[in-house]
Image 1: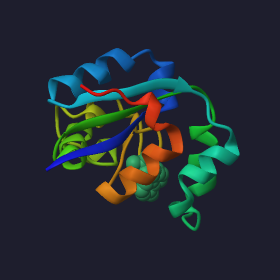
Image 2: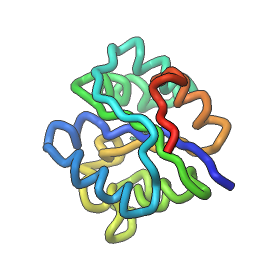
Image 3: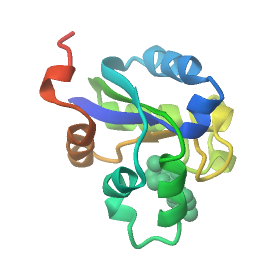
Length: 140
Ligand code: CMP
């Protein structure tokens, strides 16, 4: 099934100038970029995005980090896009990610793990709507 998913290149990766390398892996993996922009989240906006994690012990640190610098958000589309992008990203903890995955190559630790991807098609719709208007997405 053709799906969309939301990708975030996190502040640790933007700061190290590896956005191009990460987007290259996304495209090489067969995912089409439908929308793309760079922005900086406020602490409140980061808390809103990660609201499902608000009771987790890492919530405060995670939202500090995600509002610490620019991020690059994109909408990716393709067959099974949610699973395909999760495979390209690798495990949440870079130490456990498979060789060749984005998090293995670029992630620093479980928080500064370079990328985020939606974990289901339902969450992808909510996450995409958090960042993009319909008019910001191209047909291709
Ligand atoms: P992400 O896919 O953006 O979703 C939630 C984020 O919380 C996750 O990636 C990690 O970067 C971060 N995080 C920090 N600590 C943990 C933890 N112990 N378990 C899971 N996620 C964590």
